Image 1: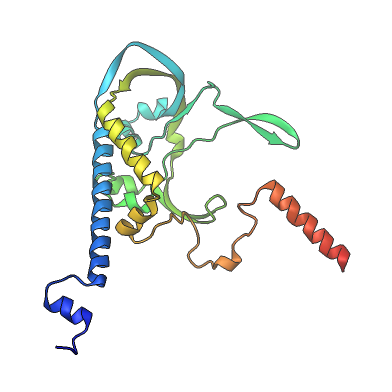
Image 2 (image 1 turned 30 degrees about the vertical axis):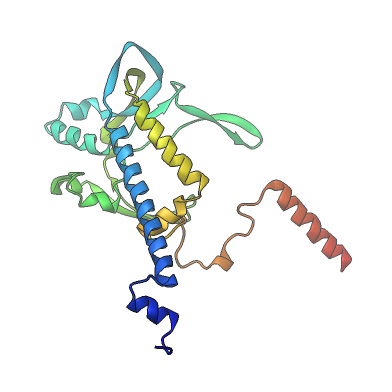
Length: 254
């Protein structure tokens, strides 16, 4: 009897060992995080499914621009086909200015440039998706394109519509006729969950528990090593200026 260790005695007598206690505590904490995650998702779904309430006095809020069929295409025998296709690849852009233009600085001067708008680029995920609903005949009007994006620093793959000339842009006033219903109890519970996640820094732990990683890495090249990344990407102008002054001092010191 004297040769038994404390852990052997705890295992034989149904007492929880120190390691088992730590595992149970962590397991219970993970269950609480999972319950918070499930409850938050359910509340978001309930909020999205709230009904729309019509306004007594509708009002205009800016302008909306979208694509419509050209007049000659509208009178052609294939008008119904291209109109049905337009419902899947149409895009909408909203602006406070009817001209849909914005100020851009060019050569030291600010000029007005019209905002660019094109038909929806079908991503490979939607290409064979039944919910998106592209037919075999409609797919013959698309071309697969691979191009480099300077914004995301990666190659983009998408299907582009070949005959965009069949559609023209139209501008109409954007009238607000309905508003989303507000559930005060639902909003209060969502705010309570958000405060708890923010105050106790639980968001990364929930993401790690559900997806295996805590931080969002965004768009990046998986083959790129950290040592090749830009060290000045997230630095402020003051920090860049201080680095510049330090480099000057080192050069003059040499």
